[in-house]
Each structure stands twice: as structure tokens, then as C-alpha cells.
Amino acid sequence: MIPYLDLSPEVSSALRSKQPVVALESTIISHGMPYPRNVETALQVEAIVRKNGAIPATIAVINGRMKAGLSKQEITNLGKLGTAVLKVSRRDLPVVIAQGQNGATTVAATMIIADLAGISIFATGGIGGVHRGASESMDVSADLQELARTNVAVVCAGAKSILDLGLTLEYLETQGVPVLGYQTTEFPAFYTRNSGFNVDQSIDSAEELADILSIKWQLGLKGGAVIANPIPQEFQLEYAVMEQAIQQALAKAEKKNIKGKEITPFLLASIEQITGGKSLDANVELVFNNAKLAAQIAEYLRVS
Image 1 (cartoon, one colour):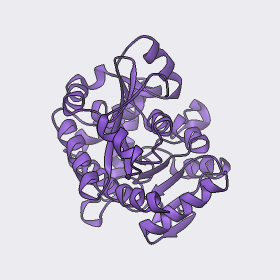
Image 2: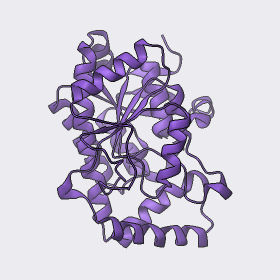
Image 3: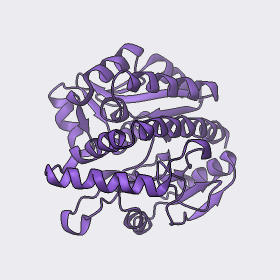
């Protein structure tokens, strides 16, 4: 029994009976989208995981307890509280637990809790990475270190396009984290399918992705993998338009001196405003797409 960890009855039963389970993060609920769109999206993502044969395990810290599998009410509460909920990464977990607080888990913290629970597949929107201007700010997301040390594969639409994608990929390479493209040779840039950077390998099926992950962990190669799943063509936004919006948002953040863990939610909200809500619509669709693929991989991983 893991201290401070609670599994919902459904997730606990699924893990005991070796059913496929997909972890889902909660920062996207509290910090990624406005209410009520955040709650609607979170519940739809869970439904997509179920439709594709797996059990969803939305992860958060509730009253100082790490939770894998939230009730509809708990998801709604996180959505209503929004940014008043603490954004929790690896360094924050002990403090939030000790103080009995609520916390919305980032990619890194979700990976940690998923691993403790015995869940090895996780679907999200996009991973964190090396921020633009990191040569001066040293702003590098804890997600990258977590991917190097924790045995959870992350299905995502690449890294958030507000980041320095080239340096993010270099960092992952240095840490030995495989970047596997699902039916793509190009690393997706969150809102768009194109970035100008290549993935390590292009893999054509969920079954082969599951085989690769299974072999990686059987060999004792610690750490996860990035499974880069491009946003569907019909929902992607034009690269040049998004880059212009990102530059405007970055200038706004610099003017307001916004840094650290507040920078990503601020930039995403600014970009949503600049694009007239189109970026939020794209964000929702790419998360749906990732949940579907994650459930399919989890099913194959279960039997591999």
C-alpha cells in the first residue's frame, strides 16, 4: 500500500484485473481552460478513453491525498476553483500533501502518481519543455526530467508551441527519452502538425508502440517516452498565424514580468484571446485525439 495514495474503486478494480488504464492530468482542468469548458472537456476525455476500451484515471491531489480516479464532483470542483487550485509538480507534492491542500497535477506530478499507482500510459495535451530564452532564464520544465526517470509513456501533441522545440528535443535526446511519432516523421507543435523538427522514429500502429514500450521497460531502461500524436488535420491552426500569436503573448508576459510556473497558463490564455478562441478549440480536439490513442496503446500493452 502506497502512503497518501487513494485509487478510486473503478481504477483499483481495473488494475487488479489487469484491464487497460489511462492516466489523465488535472492542470488542464484548473489552469488550461475556463469553466465550464474545462469540466466538459475533462468528462468528454474520460468518455473517449472508455469508448476505446480503457478505464480513465484522472489524477490530482485532493485534501492532501494523491488521487488516481476522480469523481465527477471532484472534477467539477477543480474546474470551478480554476487557478485558485495550486499547480503541483514534483517539488510541490510533499508540501501540498503535508498541508492537506488541493493540487492540480502537471505532467511531471501526474507521471509520479500514475507510476505509484501502477499506470504506465498517460494522455495529455502537450508536454512542457525548454522555454524560449532559456539560455538566460534557465526555465526548463520538470516534465523533461520526469520523462527521463519515471516509467510512464506520455501521449501528447508534441510540446507546447510556446516553447523552444529544438532545445526541448535536444534535452530529451541527452536524457535518453525516445520521441516516437505516431504516423508522422515530424514532431508536432501542439496547435499545428508541423514544427520543422523530426521525431526519432515514426511508428505506424498502437500495437507497435506498445511493443516498444514493453521492451524498453523489460530491458530495465528507466524513464518514459514521448508519443507524439499530431492534432488531426481538420483542427490544426496555421503555423504562421500561431507563431505571430505566440510572439504577441510572449511580449505581453515579458512586459508584465510573468515567470516560472505562471508563464504557461498566462501564455495559453493570452493566445486564446488573440486567436478569438480558436486555440482553445484546437487544444480540446488534440486532447481528445491523444486520449483515443493512449487507450489503444494501453490495451495492447496489457496483453504484450
